[in-house]
Length: 70
Image 1 (cartoon, one colour):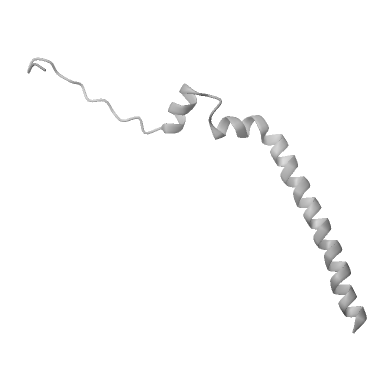
Image 2 (tube, rainbow, N blue to C red; image 1 turned 30 degrees about the vertical axis):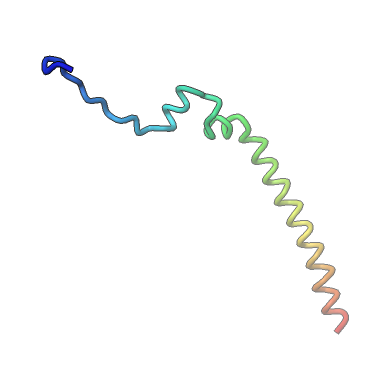
């Protein structure tokens, strides 16, 4: 390299999410969440309700069974 050639320094690309979204928009978690946010919320709610019902039935059978036995 000659002394006459100058190299302009470039700032490092620190925004990896933006770079990834620009190169592969289907590979980011942001895209997945925006696409499936409603169904993910419905699945979490359904699992929570099933667990709550199971826990309630378990509590009613075990705890009430112990208290009525003694």
